Amino acid sequence: MSLQIPHHQKANGHTGATKAVILVGGASRGTRFRPLSLDVPKPLFDVAGHPIIWHCLTAISKVPSIHEVYLIGYYEEHVFRDFIKDSSSEFPDLSIKYLREYQALGTAGGLYHFRDAILKGRPENIFVLNSDVCCSFPLNEMLQLTQERRAEAVILGTRVSEDAASNFGCIVSDSHTRRVLHYVEKPESYISNLINCGVYLFRADVLFPSIRTAIQRRADRPRLGSYRSSENLASSYMFDEEDTQKNEVIRLEQDILGEMADTNLFFVYETKDFWRQIKTAGSAIPANALYLQKAQQSGSSELAAPSANIKAPVFIHPTANVHPTAVLGPNVSIGPRVTIGPGVRIKESIVLEDAEVKHDACILYSIIGWGSRVGAWARVEGTPTPVTSHNTSIIKNGVKVQAITILGKECGVGDEVRVQNCICLPFKDLKRDVSNEVIM
Picture 1 (tube, rainbow, N blue to C red):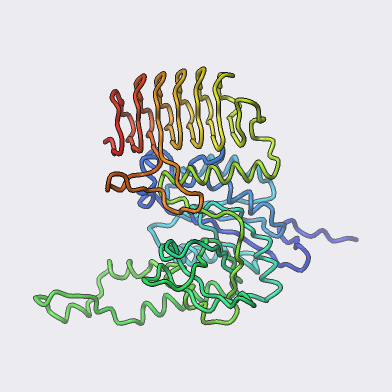
Picture 2 (cartoon, rainbow, N blue to C red; picture 1 turned 90 degrees about the horizontal axis):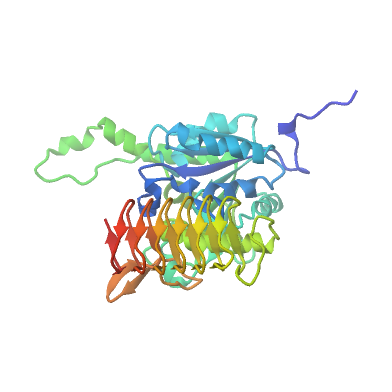
């Protein structure tokens, strides 16, 4: 009699079961993603025709040993309900669940809070992905490195310019063995241009004890803070509840990775492929371009067929209505039920659902919000930033402005109006030319 191995216990070769966790954050974060996050949580914002978090799930679905995925954050439960329902039918081999934190616990605090659920079924390895990164997610390669080196942790790293490095977590590694020797989150001085990509693979039996040690270290540390001299010093020994709650915020980057570098079995997998952080609303434009180019390279059938008027790669939703004389691309995403009129020119932009672009309008380096209207002969434009730049703001006339122009939900741009390097909050009508402004 042959024994059937339960689906969740199937192993890929000699790899033990692996689980994946996607950290989605919460509503109190995402302020830098405004005005887009006013209407849609950042992880569900469409980039290259799909929610940001869908790109993470697609990569996870290509790892044969993963059957369970947890989204951890502190959005309301209903926020991800439809997405999980759709994704469960698109990725039938994955069980996808949302675990809601009762408050912001930090990137490691959330993992630790839900440790029982994550450790159920005794997985050997746990992938942890930040939802706000855009990359090719080489998860199978990270898993292979773990096996080759018997690693307890593997971090995905990439090289950036030296002046940009201090904005990220920096990794000093042994160039031969790839072992992580030193990790510093946003160092004040330059230590390395190899940075943390926000994608990790941990051995389950190492991750949670490391977090527990960090929590213990935090609890043992005398918390004398800074007190005004008029206050009684005795108050420094009073632990109020608020202080204890603050104590629960434990972050992988600040509290865990630096300590892990002191153990011998922490390695870095350096990706030579694309990587971008999706922090500000404008950073959705480079992410859109990178994901569209990746889809083009992999021969995705979702993209519009290139022609004289479609300069690949371009994503057009099946329900959108694009006039045949409109010229689109490269790196353009057109959302559901969008109407694009004759003679329109769009490049390096995202047009969100139900928007309308009238005849002969021009849209460059911009995001057109849900249900917005762009008038005839209008021009909505941002400024191109270098491909290598991780910054979406530029200096114009001595003032720092966003390179990408963003129209929030249901904005209107009048006929023949020019909008340049502006961020426009929802429900605004622009009847005159504007540049380098935030329109409240």
